[in-house]
Amino acid sequence: MTANELIYAGKAKKLFTTDTPDVLWVEYLDQATALNGLKKDTVIGKGQLNNQITSRVFDYLTAKGIKHHFIKQESATEQTIQRLSIIPLEVVVRNVVAGSFAKRFGLEEGAKLAQPIVEFYYKKDELDDPFINDAHVLFLDVATETEIAELKAQALEINQVLIELFNQLGIQLVDFKLEFGRNQAGEIVLGDEISPDTCRLWDKETGDHLDKDVYRREIGGIVSVYEEVLRRLEQLEGEK
Ligand code: 5GP
Image (tube, rainbow, N blue to C red; front, side):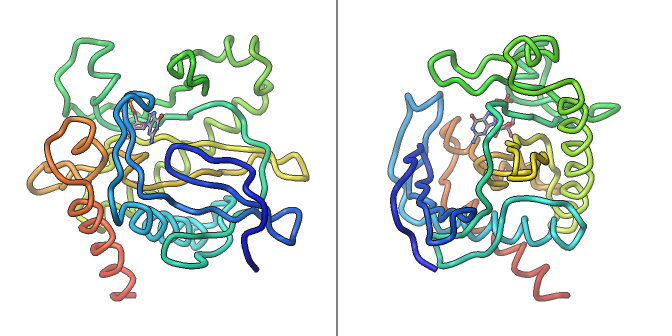
């Protein structure tokens, strides 16, 4: 299988068609962005790190019975996925107070939440992806009531599996962003990526940030911390 026609060029990924209508080809780029694209840099090696990390995380989800769009890692920077019609929502799950949640409620980062919290953000760059509630999701007609319940249930189930995975890597899963889409059968399926670009990952011993916050907050280098996450995933794989 090979990449054919470019159909989408995003901030960190390019999407191509393949010879199979239901299968798309993804290329991970050496691009880092933050603040909705206002901060942008080329980071050599980032594309292959995110591709390899995401591929391993999706393989882990497969082993745990979670359905998703990922098919196969095709090269260092490329993978194939099932074509989905993407739902324009960012589904964020939080286990620990951090980021925009800490800011919104005037809290220090770091307190563990009694229960995970699922939030929706409307994916619209020109509006800066606003925080929205269930009624807004219905108003915007992006998902039905049943689908909202399904999105929340899947997000919480994925959270449990990811907490367990990262725990084995000595990492606390603070929060993360998921995107979902509908497949040909109309089922809701997990899409996009799961990487240090989309998750907050804190080293359990040192509290060090092993995620994109090193770039957003200018407190470290992306490549070395993403390499550390990949190294721990590979080590876990080697132990099995
Ligand atoms: P926050 O709302 O605190 O900024 O982000 C919560 C979590 O979702 C973080 O793990 C963050 O990485 C992820 N997240 C939220 N919005 C985006 C986004 O637009 N792009 C990426 N890559 N991650 C996001």
